[in-house]
Length: 253
Image (tube, rainbow, N blue to C red):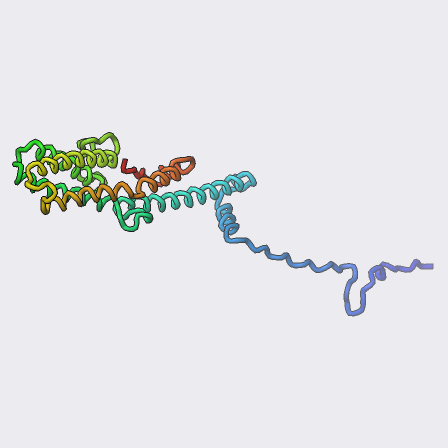
C-alpha cells in the first residue's frame, strides 16, 4: 500500500489567501520629541563637532562653555550699563541732587573767580602779590577742570598741578587752593574799600563763588561714586569690568 503524501497540506491557508504564519504586528510610529530653542542650538553645535568630540563629556563641556559665555556676556553688559550711568554724574548730576552737578558748580567757581580777579587787578594792580597768587591758583584750577571735562585728551595729565594719578583728586586740590587765594584777594579788596560791606559787583561775584562751594559740599556725587566702586570692585565684577573696558569713576575728594 502506497504511503500517503501529506506534504502539500502542512500549511493551512486562511480563506481569502491570508497566511496566518506570516502575520507580524504592525510597528507603531515613533513619537517626535520636540526640543526647546536652547536644546536646538546645542544640538546644532553638537552636529558640527568632529565625531571624536560627540561624547557625553564633550557635550557637558560645551554646555559649561555656553553657560559661562552667557554669564560673562550678561555680567559685562550690566557692568557697562552701570559705568555709562556713573561717568555722567559729573556733568549730569546724581538723581538725588535735583539737577545740580559738579561740573556746573565748578564752572561757576571758575567764572566768578576770573571776574573777581579782573576787579582786583584794576584796583590793586596786576603786580599785587594777592592778584598774582590768585591768578596762579585760577590757572591751575582751570587746567584741572578742563582735564576732567574732556577726559584728559587735550593735555598731558602729568603736567597738571597736584596730579598724583587722579584727575579728580587734582581738581579737588586745585579748587581748595583757589578758594584760599580768592578769600585772601577779596580780603585785600575790602581793606581798600571805603565800605567793606558795600563793594558793588565784586561783592556779588564773591557771594556766587562761595555759594557754589556750599552747593558742592551738599552734593551726593561722592556717595554715589563710592557705592558704584563697591559694586564693581569685588570678584567677579572687577574681572568682568576689566574685560569689558569699564573704567574707574573717581570721587571729588
